Length: 251
Image 1 (tube, rainbow, N blue to C red):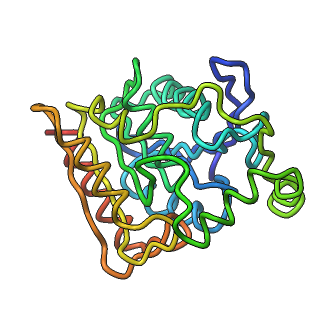
Image 2: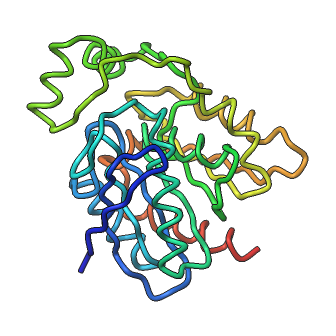
């Protein structure tokens, strides 16, 4: 039975986190995609499968689900993830792996490449390498949603997602800039060749950046037929990710 925790981030936002206790010393800290939450159908499946291999802390990123604040589309959400990682350590987990999907993938990469990540492994699923991509119809819809008052209102009413009206100032470093600093922590990039949001240019650019340092431990999996993020991921792929994490944190 999951327990609901309320955390306070370093910038003062109240964040909801659902904890599925595990029987090992490994915890998966999971970050959902845009308009998702820790209890959306896709994330429920992610939690269920990963929970077989360890504890799970699933974050409602700011502006989503039961959390306070407003979404900044992957910028200030690094504080949300950091608070969840700290909570995992406080709960007694010795090994912590962050797993992010789509927008959440950009968050785990940026947090792990930041000044004090305190993570043992990182997994990016269906994530972007760079900002402002509009090359697919779904991403054009995302930009229309976040860029207009009407779109933000519809996201709030229809999906319960509260989006900050102000744009980025300053613009945050994109994932591909932060990726080299993840080393020497193991870093897995997972992307589908049927992803309708971000084409394969994104994972390849992210991997090229992450694999640059001499102590890098980066891997790229391009999955045939896989669509986008938590709504499309299969139980089989999640199980393989869990095995990769279990192996990575003991090497």
